[in-house]
Length: 262
Ligand SMILES: Nc1ncnc2c1ncn2[C@@H]1O[C@H](COP(=O)(O)OP(=O)(O)OP(=O)(O)O)[C@@H](O)[C@H]1O
Ligand SMILES: [Mg+2]
Image 1 (cartoon, rainbow, N blue to C red):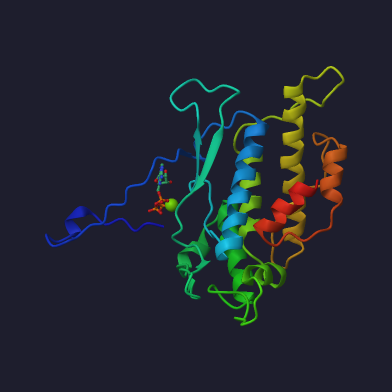
Image 2 (image 1 turned 180 degrees about the vertical axis):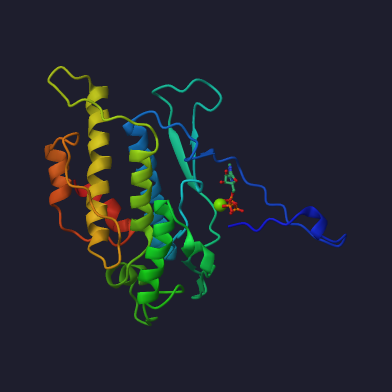
């Protein structure tokens, strides 16, 4: 969270840093998601980016609300069409955590006010992260340092709980509830390939949201209750396959592996 000072608070000797970044698109909060295949794509790119960063650097974003997920489209400036591709960029690592190349850990403590927000799932996530992280070995790291030659990340993922699943669950809920996407009609024998793809993407997004919600719910102090299936969520082979799995999803790598196995 940025603290904004009025410019007259600065003296003449004030120095500034200007950071120039390539334009990475619009925040998901305002980006128009038109189809379930786009929602699925945004989720999938985000999960994969987190997985790679987790595995390379023990990275956790820790503040991945939808203002920090930028989406750009290859049709920028022109009317969007079905051939366009979306590109997701995660920004603002102000509260993130990673292993440095020199064996240190880089992380930032959260200010207390971060945990006091109400009325948005995002604010529950900060509190849940605090539960998990403080139950473990603190904000810096989850596990004791080890000298043996094993991938530290793998150990963290197995014995610890990384915060990526919480933020990925948040992202799925935003895509399902806040982007104005309607349930596509069920597939029939005469459905076009486009309709089939759209329905499949819808089922995957909903199925994983449920699955991830259940996995998180198994952890103490998690307030989210997975929804029971409603009439609008017709059971399909795909949804049942997602729901039936009992694997624990404790890091973005787990989530990606789980999705690939469906
Ligand atoms: N590379 C980029 N391309 C396009 N827009 C960007 C880029 N980087 C940042 N922005 C825009 O600027 C906003 C603020 O950026 P960022 O989150 O990095 O700064 P911040 O100081 O942490 O702000 P906040 O406290 O609002 O999170 C983003 O939500 C986004 O709209
Ligand atoms: Mg920000």
